Length: 172
Image 1: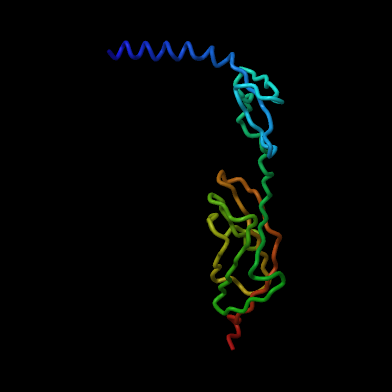
Image 2: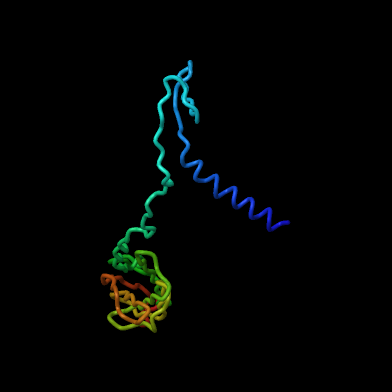
């Protein structure tokens, strides 16, 4: 029973499709000026010519246009504290050094501090250093910035500062 019903439905669908292609469509305007579409001709109606082609848009390329990667801004390092030609007064000889790195400090970068041209320990992952037992007098500081591979990528300008502390000879 189901097979017979299925065959009849399929037969009905296939015979009705060609009949729909031969039908004509007419368009006219009513008394209010509204368009009226009909399958029977009315006085003053015009016949529309319809194409049997479906309205399908041509395919477009879905890929986005290639964007240029922004040029990497070179890193800059500067010593913020102590200031250039500044004076540090500390009788223990401790000097707190802080630096600024721009653009923003990234993971994997390492900073090394030079005091009078000599490295002060191994490179570290921040730009804050504490120097202990620095002798009194004039000193020069410089920071070096290294990338993940240990390559030097930036150096700060040399900062000169003066450390004042009591004399070992004349403590008063």
